[in-house]
Length: 199
Image (cartoon, rainbow, N blue to C red; front, side):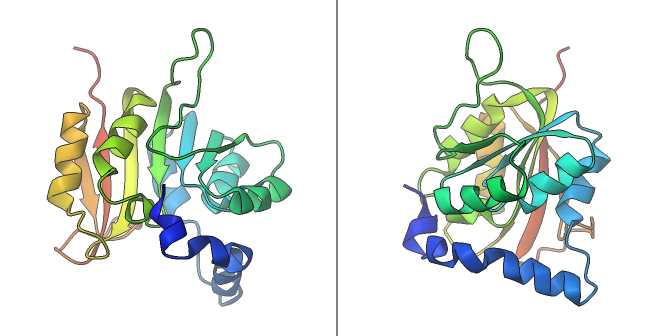
């Protein structure tokens, strides 16, 4: 069970996109997450906790193969209405498996992105399981890119790094914004962990 339901997130699904529309109307850039992901030149991206598809649709527009996963069917319905050609999968990040070709094992993406405080909305106590499951969806040399607010749940950056290390990932970058401003110990962090290439 995702904390998304506990904090009432689903009740705001119909108006979720309005925030970004208002920002765009003010001339603000709303695709910082996609910009950062594209710096790694991925061929494929799993948008984990995709919501109404803002990040995934922008990545698709840029020619990247993308799959979106979310626990909220109402949010996915909105995403499908905007980009019906993109695969949208209903599932909890702690257990969902986006199958690859052949044996049905999780496929390997170049990047798994968890934008929009996704790690804050997973059920408390499942964070390590979520990170491990997302790591299973990485290709060798692939990256998990996650941004979330600190202090909203017991999850700390030390915990997050520990969960990633246990999943076989190495810390590569940490910034305080999606624009790659240096992390200064503040309340928001964007972190990149990488699955090491084979020796």
